[in-house]
Every structure is written in C-alpha cells, then in structure tokens.
Image (cartoon, rainbow, N blue to C red):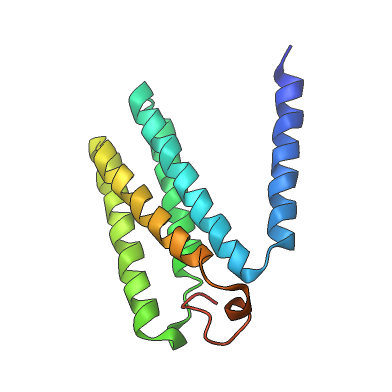
Length: 140
C-alpha cells in the first residue's frame, strides 16, 4: 500500500540530489561530499545500535567511497603540503571507519564524524572571492 509513495519520494529525493550536484560549484561539491560522508557515518552508527550488520557495512562503505573517490580524488597535488596533509587525514579517517565497522566501535565512527565536521566547517569559512582564485585550498 505504501510502496508507491516510497518509490515516488525516493525518486524525488534522488532528483533533488542530482539537481543539487548539477548546479553546484566546485566549492559546493566538496561541501556536499563532506555532508554525504557525515550522513553515511551517522547511518552506520544507527545500524550498529540496531544490530544491522549489512546496513552498517553498506553505510561505512559509502562513507569510504565518498572519501576516497570524492574527497581524496579531488585533491590538487599542486597545493603541495596542504594537499598531502589532507590526503593523510583522509587516510586516517578511512582507517577509523574500517576499525569502527569491524569492531562495532561507535567512538571510532564518531571520531571520523568530528574530523569531517571540522574540515567542513573550515571549508565553509573560505571567503566567496577566494573560492574562484587559483589559491583556493587543496581541492580542485
């Protein structure tokens, strides 16, 4: 009875996400990646509390893909040390996600969220005029 509504709602959310991505600036794309990683990790924590192993694994896998294929892949090597430090931090976050998932360690997952939230907060503080310049942080 409710399945059609859910599929329409899901399709609407997917369309909304796709539209957001199509219209997003490169700076906004990084914010969306941070948001997506945080959301996925929160879903993993929730799955742990419900004892849903598959959901936990799926959510952690999504967060790791966002970090590896989105955030790390967008690093600009020309930014030098900043990009290298971010790469190392993203690697550390990935290890914490794997540890948290393997041992149902919510604290490890919460640490990953805290680190990503700190990065996102710093990223969002970049002034609009600097977002268009060649010196715009380490992400392309």
